Amino acid sequence: MLFVFDENLPQQLCKGLDMLEQANLRSPHKVEAKYAIEVMGKKGAPDEDLIVKVGELDGILITQDKDFRSKKHYFTLYKEYNIGVVLYSLPSKDVYWDKVKSFIKNWEDVKQRISEIEKPFALIISKTGGIQTYDF
Image (cartoon, helix red, strand yellow):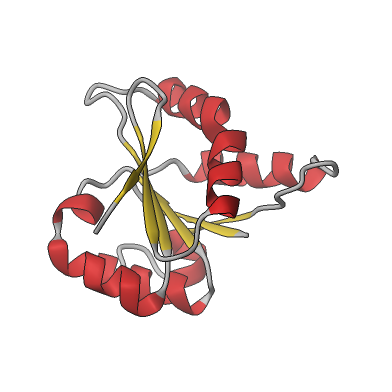
């Protein structure tokens, strides 16, 4: 599975999870993590372009950008390009370590859930750590 991390998440988090994932030889769900700038070739690419690119790469977009949940025309793009989206809903005053802890706490559960559902999909990780499927 390819996970593409949106620019609103720390690049170091993406790289760290990718390194840990590569060393996790016993995981039944192998993940490659890439940062949005890496796959887009530039910083600040429009969300719509990122959705298209993630679809072309047969990937899953990881973000905490509320636009990916609130802009209805994005849902059409999710379906058209057959992508999965994981939306992290973190506290508004979150700090770096809150993000890291949330990702680590939910990482294996997210991979397991994604392996069980078909694209297109959206998963929402709540502030309390619960995972729910979002219909669009």
